[in-house]
Image (cartoon, rainbow, N blue to C red; front, side, top):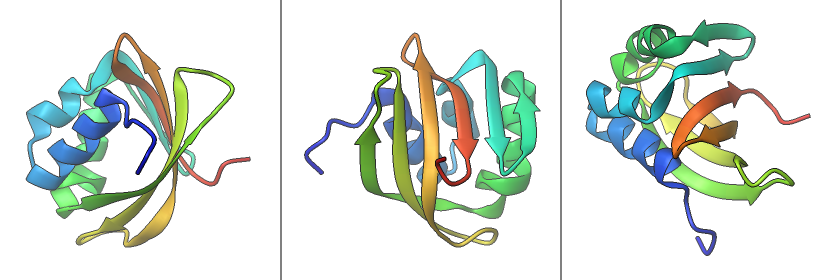
Length: 111
């Protein structure tokens, strides 16, 4: 992939793939918002809950298959292939960054 991958996105993928929940949470800001198809999780506690029930807790594995920059330099749309004991498939995730961490993650098709 020719596009440089933001460090927080790389940390999100690597931590998930290695099952490292502490590193996963460290990729997010304290006040992060994670929206998974309308289920919204707030702050590090919310992200930790989603991680247990839908991500590392389901032994998810991510493969980055595409990265699209947006008009906002702090927002990218990453297309990830997901496998594991939960959701399996490929789709977009919109990441918004602040201070080199994920401030907002929306898992749903881009409008």
